[in-house]
Length: 101
Image (cartoon, rainbow, N blue to C red; front, side, top):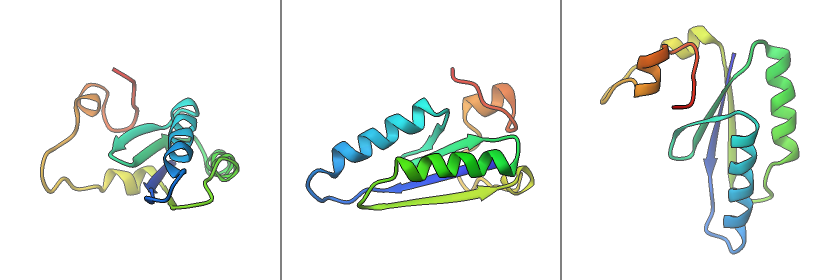
C-alpha cells in the first residue's frame, strides 16, 4: 500500500511557515519527496495506511489544499512515464522499495 500526498500551497500571509512545518513532519514521518509538492510513503497494510493518514490529519493545515491518495502496489506499478524515466533510486533498488541515497 502506498500513500501519496499532494500539496497545493496558497499565497496567503503566514502559510509558508505552516507548509514548511508540514513538509518537515512528512520527512520525519518517513515520506519520500518524489515531486515538487508530491510525497509518498510505503505502508505494509491498509490499517497502517489509515494510521498514517490520521497522523497527517493531526498535522494538517488550516489553509491551502492537501490531497491524500491511497493506492495498492499493483496500481502504483501501472504508472506510465510519458517523458523521462525512473529516477536513480528506483533503478538501484527497484520500484517496490526505496532508500535514501
